[in-house]
Image (cartoon, rainbow, N blue to C red; front, side, top):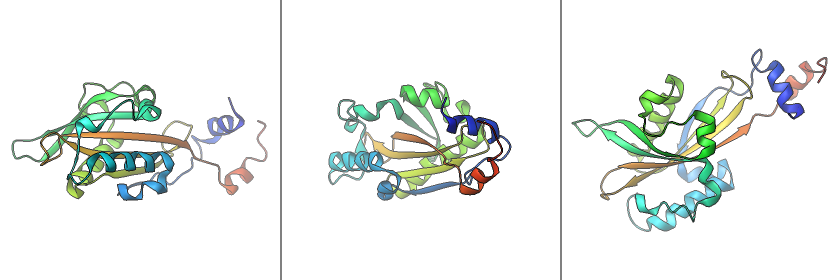
Length: 191
């Protein structure tokens, strides 16, 4: 265990860090989240060409190999009025399973606690409304340490070219760095 992890384990539950905020930003800002997000957005843009949505068949594991542990796929669930209600987890990478538990086959509303459920559904609704990819960004400090920044891109997919039927999602977790004030508060801790 690194010294950073030891620091997090000892003070995280008491002080926490990060804003515990949640924001949804356009997928066009993928570069703000890192080169991996930028590469994924570029990959799907090339595959989409002039179509409104990417097709589910645009998801090629060979092309996306470096990202597979952190991807998820979802099938959208609409109500009788064709209003987005939920999504079924149809595929989940090994690291995504490690972070959230294996949710394959479950509805978002059934497999995630309220905080995560609401964030996922809000992001998917935003992507459907925007008819474009979105990125959900959060800083977690109210959970068990280590505290992390979570960025998840939701790319809408369609099998019928007219409305969203599936989602491709890729996530990355980054440990939140200690702020200078936090380091000063830790000066008396033995690590």
